[in-house]
Length: 138
Figure 1 (cartoon, rainbow, N blue to C red):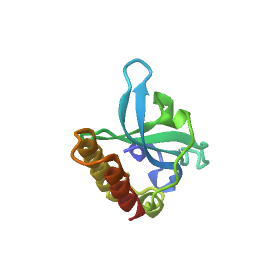
Figure 2 (tube, rainbow, N blue to C red):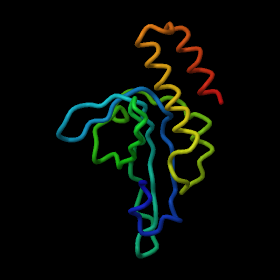
Figure 3 (cartoon, one colour):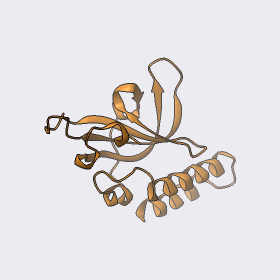
């Protein structure tokens, strides 16, 4: 996703600055969209073979399960404010240059489903927190 536009995708260095948390992303002009968001930086080589410098990116999953990955400069998000949460094990498992997705999407989808059940009153807030802890501990 993000690496597709890079000159040398094989040189990518990814640094996750925070794990998935409930938050929002907002285009420069438009409304906020809430969902699961994780933040990080990406650095890769340019045409001259030198690294261009770390740039922020976000990975966002809305409640419908749609995955968006974008450079941070294009969006205002929860990454811009507040404390970051610890990295989930799934983020540690991603090797630099690995495509964003896989197990992270599965966990985020499960969390979105649990949040929906909580919001509908089918499960309690305590049950939601317990299930969330189990998912994030995987």
